[in-house]
Image 1 (tube, rainbow, N blue to C red):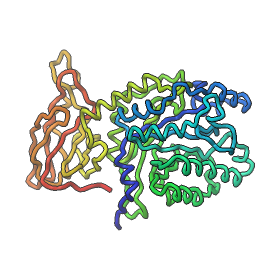
Image 2 (cartoon, rainbow, N blue to C red; image 1 turned 90 degrees about the horizontal axis):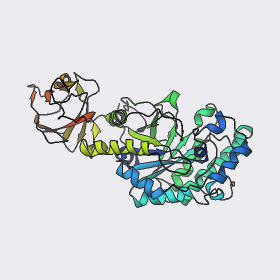
Image 3 (cartoon, helix red, strand yellow; image 1 turned 45 degrees about the vertical axis):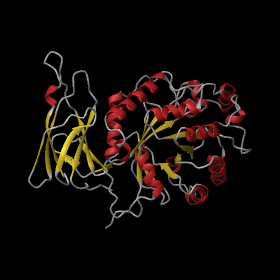
Image 4 (cartoon, rainbow, N blue to C red; image 1 turned 180 degrees about the horizontal axis):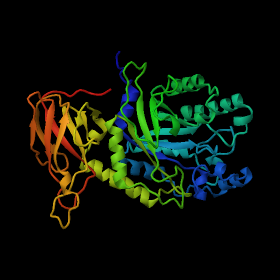
Length: 423
């Protein structure tokens, strides 16, 4: 069996590597998450009143795009419409339940895509397929699909070139005919190079769907090795994850993931060639909370200091570590990059807890003679020995300098021949 190769737009998506997910809508003003309409059984008339409070006074799309860029993110996926049915774009007569008819009087999707392009960020648009606002979703599903199709067509026609369309909600009616041929065919006519992604949900992470889709999804779950041998088409992979426990703004949700966990998760995704789509949740006025900005800043500093560009351009290599299952390798431009976890710090026993975690790491699957090994963060040269067969490498990993801990440290190996990729 053969392994398919990615199309140009899928390969370009994989090189984006790290993206920002934005869940934002009128629900944010309540600070109770993105599904509060449904779970708290808010009457529609009461919920619609939120449009009068939706001023978007601090939703500065240029500043958000700049934040993503500064955070090492190369694309943004914005919820143009979520399950509550409210649209951040001009629905142009389909209904008046949209941002231009709210207190903000703005087409926020239009502002978003322009800001992304100005900052060199690829704009992606999320669009729900599950809709709690439209009665036809339950009473007349074919009519609802006409409405869905017209809505997505507006996005495809009126906002220029998009990086992709990201759908979510088919899991709500698993046995239904969603007319995916029709929907995706329309997207291809208007946006031939756009990624088409449809989230399979938590229960079906990593499952392939319709043949026209371009990526597997891993909602709030780390990906593993993807077996593409004999597959009819090369599919990318993407993990989307919340920073705390909700996608939409929760004013009382204090359960944030640690910066170290975010870094490790980014590494796991890239180990298997998957993109990492990390969510932010602006508040009711559209401002991203300070703690979320801080986490992004910490991750950006790690990228700049440790892996740099290889976190985007590196491809998974068939190399294993005998001493730490979390360690892995990426290959880029004829060099190997080893991602080393759980290292200790330098110092004496009065200040160092984990110094014993340094020392030799043994890697197998090395594809050629290693010429040099250096930490990417400070250029320090590392000692190593290599077996006569050149397959195995024993690398002496020095400890972190005092007061440093990068969570995952990267070693660049220069080798005589190109490594073998995992596809």
